[in-house]
Length: 320
Image (cartoon, rainbow, N blue to C red):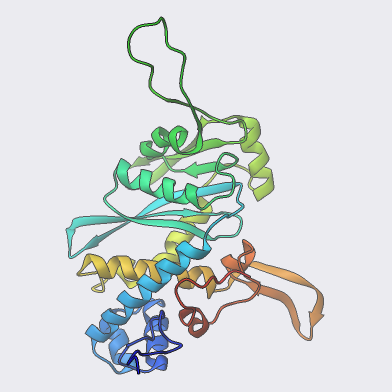
């Protein structure tokens, strides 16, 4: 006898959870509907430390599934933005940076940290690695200058300029923006806390490429409406992001774990009214096919239930 344990739950949040699968499902459902750890514990019938442990394990599981499945994405535009928050106390500001596909509403990448150029670089580089053609997209952002600085390096094509003469160092690597790529900044001007003007600026690329993408998206002018709307959804789903709430994250690991968990549930398990498609042949009274972002972008062909999604072992793809 080898004395080894074998279970179909190994590699899932249910493995050694020390509680039933129904309890794990209930905890995940409640915390991703905006309930705090304490409130979730009262509703489910367990201690808040149990809720925190389940969130940590499920968040790690969600991150691994996202890394495995969110690859070779075929998108022609992305939108990026950051959400303000904090950990422990308000003086410790932490930002949730997000990249979303405005067409399918699929969350491509999320990063957490201080709002610096390093956070922006990590966000864009990881998002770039998930795309099939990173040189053929339009990036829509706000006026944060780090996006403009990093766009050529991340989405451009590197080349080495010719050296002038035969002595001295070679010039630094430069980046050429392809005709199929562009970067548009949507800059808001404020008077106090009120927006008084919004102007757009093409930081890289051509107006022709931008107009082509706007027509494909059905937009009349450049905007970041998809990621701004997702910010509101994230604050509703994630209790750590709720404004004027006592449910903020005390520990950094809980903040990161819940962010990964919310991202996974949003992409795979939550249908959106704006993504539904009309059926060619109605099924009784059903006229529309309800879709999730992962269905719209082509990663799966059905809405995943929370139990099925959590039961997916690490290393096994969810893609159809």
